[in-house]
Image 1: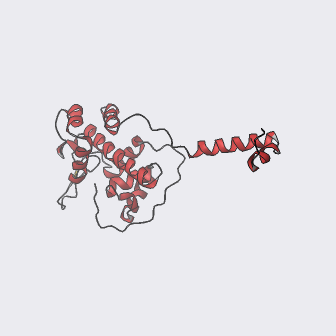
Image 2: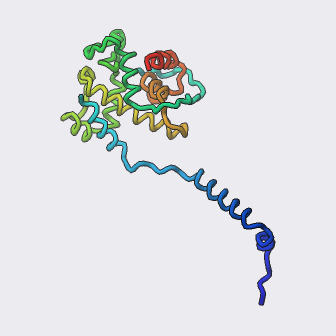
Length: 207
């Protein structure tokens, strides 16, 4: 007994083969476009530990006015090396690792990256005792450690990587140099604080 054809069967029978091929290809391309990208099989702790290799050779403004998120379209690769070099140049132009800034504040700023206690507390929390111990032979880093270039640079990278990833999750786009600069200057949510505008301009001017 012949099976009764559906409207779809009749439509397919009357459609040229090349049209069907184009339709199938279009569907395939759309599926590929909206599939999630593969995530590298590396935990944050593994990444943080890995950055210690090239390392060896904060400004928290709570209550600032939020601003609209306006991602910057940059064609260059936004590497932590480049942004950390710029941050160091802006924070400590004389490259004095012993520098202690903002002496009038409770949380003074230490070293080449002018790191404050809340910033460093976050670094120790993010990295964890085991990783800090493996990297530096101690349970936690101190503000005096921020006078050591290798430790300060590693700490800055840990902070920026962690909160850069957090930004990417919230915004749906990767962190760029402007976002990293705002985070260093304004804390975890610095990327949406208008108070970081002047700092970003300084960073851009030296990159």
